[in-house]
Image (cartoon, one colour):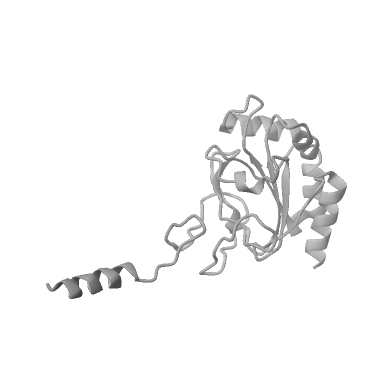
Length: 194
């Protein structure tokens, strides 16, 4: 092969367009997880944009209090309240006290997902920790562990909890700040009504 042809072949291969997610991985078809939570597949070609307002939330796949994988994108078509917390955080515990009340108030219009990043000792949570959290606060919605820190970009200025109101097409509409119960309720009402 002549040098010019070799260079052109290398350039042709190197310039082949490929689709990547924000994490730099090839786009793959979305696969539904096996769990008992509501399931509505996202549209084909949905691409994550990060944790900023206006972006499509990443499809985090984390294990819940029952040991089942949960995908954030399985809740396409529902309003999602994403609560990124730790077990050691006092404001996180305060918000958890109102989780079930919020679930009952909004019913089928809302899916409330709690991501626990760390235990009270700062360790990655295990299923037993999720079960303790669910039992302590009487939560009936998904509580998932994030031992690999996939949700850490949701935290801004190291303030916890990070609470994101996400509309039916998986777009982050609002960061609820301060994340108290009144502000959370108002954000959900705005997304459901909007």
